[in-house]
Length: 200
Image 1 (cartoon, one colour):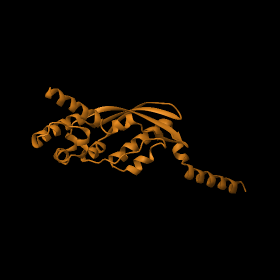
Image 2 (cartoon, rainbow, N blue to C red):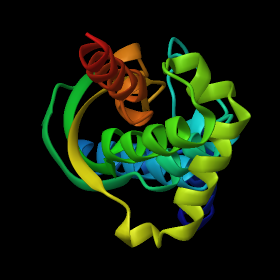
Image 3 (cartoon, rainbow, N blue to C red):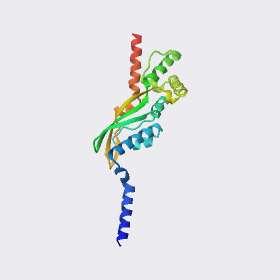
Image 4 (tube, rainbow, N blue to C red):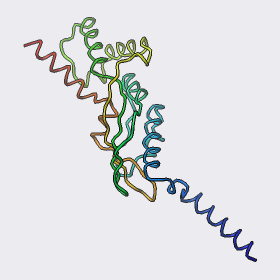
């Protein structure tokens, strides 16, 4: 009789674990946070947006599909160097050191080539996203370079995670989204400022 009761208890516990994912919540907090962040970045590397979205909290911004070769390269080349300073319980903050493409260097080269070949005199974010001639230049730069030889820089991303039903999910806000997009707008603005000073 005791053996039968024990057997049924084990079966019930196994069923609960399968349904609720208790094997995951039994892991130490820091391990859960690290695994969530690393899995999220890996999904971005693979351009697997549904999987990346699955690691985000309900109130997060959505993960956007890259619309250019440059956008895809930004995602593909994100690398986690370290995850530190994990603090909190239900509301977690973690410092994530990332290696990312140095967009300022890449965009500066593309801008010079664009001006030489097109005769244009200005550059803005809309052009970066939509101009076909500029897109071809980026394709050439990104295809001719071995990915390991592309210029890179180290950036800090502040990841916020919330506990949703025992699972830590990333709360993607505008600041973190900009980091994951390589601070594209910041690089474009720097180039615009340089061009403006040269005109003056």
